[in-house]
Image 1 (cartoon, helix red, strand yellow):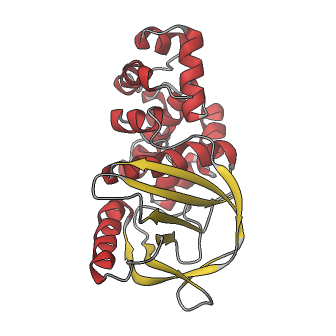
Image 2: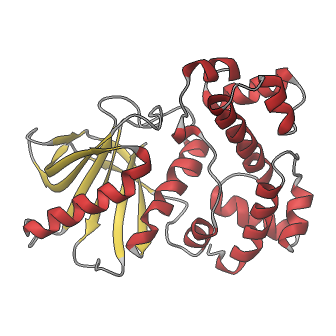
Amino acid sequence: MNYCNYTRNISRAIDYIENNPGSKITAAEAVKRAGMSATNFRRAFMGTFGTTIAAYSRGRRLTMIARKLTGTRERIADICMQYGCESPEIITRSFKRMFGMTPAAYRAAGKNMIFLEQQRLTKATIKHVMCGGIIYQPDIMASGQFCIRGIKGSSAFDALTKDIKEMFISFVRTGAHRGHEYIYYALSAGGGSLFKTDERKKIDITVGLSCKGRAGTVVPAGRYAVFRHSGPPSCMPYSYEFIFRYWLKQKMPGKWPAIIFQKIDNKLSNRFRLVSYIYIPF
């Protein structure tokens, strides 16, 4: 179902949560700020993002706590109280459920687990997802092993979108894609899990064409959840944000992929509209 008419309402509720990080926002408060009925709000938010507004609010508070743990030397108890978490036992359980370790262990590790954080839902992401830029329910299908041969590189997380775009443009300029139905690219973490990648670790990128054998980046055979993205190229990060921050956490908790790949439809895509299929091991 398309919930495009509710984007402004949902954005108002999200703004309220972000402006009150130290408060435990109830569903009733969020609904009031959104200016919707409780039934429509719950249907639109859950139907789009697969989670409740209370779970989103809790995730945001835990993410802010995590950032403070690595960015300051304030006492853990003081940090938790700043975000409305008074019980050490409750915060420890919630934090461990989200990040796989206690707050003390997270601080000792000294790195931000970016893929496990609950990022803010921006107005752009809300509009992209709720207006059909990516569909919440993917197709599940099998894919045989193949490889991707082309341009290889690596990128830090904060520069990933820019580096993929530059590599994609470089590959297209070679003209090697002409006559082929799809251009492929893959993201991997050097044999490790993408979800366990922190903000300092490099992510490997391959952009090119599919090939047989192992003379390139090997994509293993298996079952994949396949998402269709359609929209301006600038909206691609919003599709990935939705998949990683919401869908994977809801549908495959603890199952963290080592590689994902995407194929871009050469015939349907142009400089203004990108039609592509994102494959996540399922």
